[in-house]
Length: 315
Image (tube, rainbow, N blue to C red):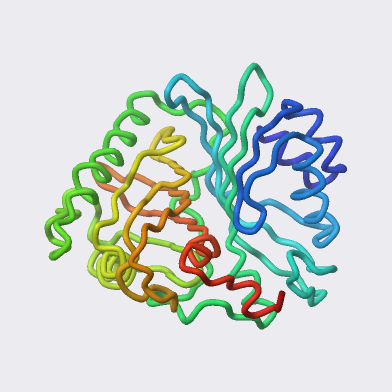
């Protein structure tokens, strides 16, 4: 998988995809690209436009791990794409200058070939860098998220199995016995102090921002979500893996809730909203210390009847 990612930086996408992926590779991504099927479609709709618009695109992961989930093998990572924006992409006008935008990716591997890819990138953050804002200011801090504090998130060899099991168990307990126990009135009902260090750090996408410390996370990161989607629940994952002290999960959707009040400038719809999310965590001791989150907010807006790209760029 590491070689696959490296090759996409220096070789033609169609050839690389053909070498590393199954011919019928199943690709799921951010709005408006959605679902693409097969090497030819993934090349023409996803990677060739990226390579034309960012000819020197570099992928800089700061977390990279692998694991098994429901009898399947997954490799996942998150970090930054960095490159010079030379031609328009997704209708976003190029400025010719260097930009960076966060990515998260999960790849399912079968018999040495990539069978499935799920990718999210922070498109609103890229647009912000060329002077186009499609979301109101974040309730959290608008900083560019750094990698893990210890700098040990890229794992090229198998992690300690006992540590991996402990990391996964902690996250699963936090989700299903903590977050999902919200009583729709008081955030204290989740008991998140059982799972998170007091000095934890949370990095969300542009529009949500970053939070430093559990109190700030509850107020600035989780608070707006539970206020707008009070009945939201984690609904399971397409993949949930751990290696050493790092954990990753993704779901399509990963969260479902009723949109009952304004969120990120999006009006309430009183209808169900389904969020495609990627989470990456770092465990420190018996609690979680850091969390990097990607949410397809363009798709959340679409479900609220708002086309953020069209609203700013035109049809």
